[in-house]
Image (cartoon, rainbow, N blue to C red; front, side):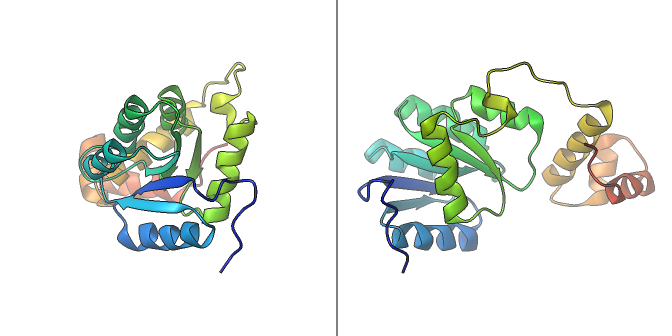
Length: 189
């Protein structure tokens, strides 16, 4: 068992919102080992019920879940309690969703899989005002290249199609083989 983190109050509560039960349970166990009070939810509606009963100080929200998205969770958890610090996790990150999450009040944004220490570090950075990403540093932002925007859009559509390349190609209006060639390329800088 890991010693509780002295920089985080051991009585702090954290709400984990993720539809992946294995990932959610693993994180919950790791946070309990670090002395936090943990509650879990598999979707946005469950999270709002738990937050309505007792608002958490911290929340970790998956961006993509069946039904309502993590961005909906950020918006609604902030309306329940504006002081809740929220970290968004996703396996399909993009610049636009990062900016959207920050505008809605998220403290930070991390790619999945993230472990408990990475998440707690992100909360600490958010609490100290250190920029978590370029989306919240207050400076001018360089627009993504056209290649990067295309790559992010393709991966977002593919994620919405749960990895079904034929369905994603249909939605994108391109041939399946063309999509497969695009997917073989690395993400543009």
